[in-house]
Length: 294
Image (cartoon, rainbow, N blue to C red):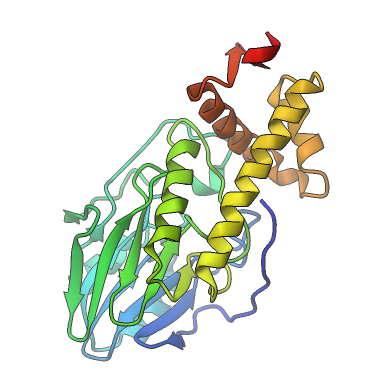
């Protein structure tokens, strides 16, 4: 939950940010979405794909349609189905006739205290992509990179022609992602970070929130280190006798907006579940202890 970099961009305006890539910012800023959800239009005037169409808001839909113009929309693709990412898919498909091709549907009754980012239970893809499968158009190819962790259905999309990777919420340009059990999984998230680090061919990340990441492997290495430091903090908290998440969070997230503490607590829980799987920690109701300290 730590800020990485600032960004300043206008709403409802399509900005050319790289070869074959334009960005339109939705007006849904919040403590979780930063300045809002960034929708990406990939391709040229002839045919395009739209990545993360964002919330179902008339202003944002109109801005996307204006940016698309007369181009044929080959695909509407969502990285995952939190409500700041996928609800715009259905109305955009209705207006353009384009198929929804991307992540799998997923709904949960409770994903923790993140009302702004609950799952979109109305999301209905025409085609679900699995790891390595591609969408293509004239002059561009988007290949799915499965990155579970933030959500179990999370995909990134690699633009083969330029080396750009659209990272959704897996890697953001302003903050670390919330990992909220039961669907959010720290073990999977760390494995997905390592997967991106090992890829090597990605030259720039375009996240759904925050600035473009121009040194992606450096950032991912730092994110892996950051999560490992959080784990060490948790171990120290338990050793100090703070065995409940509610006791740990104020100590671990001093200086962080208190509105984010409930979400931070979910990430702490995700770390603890990972430690439990590895045989390092054990829980009794809301109390956590280390195996060696029992």
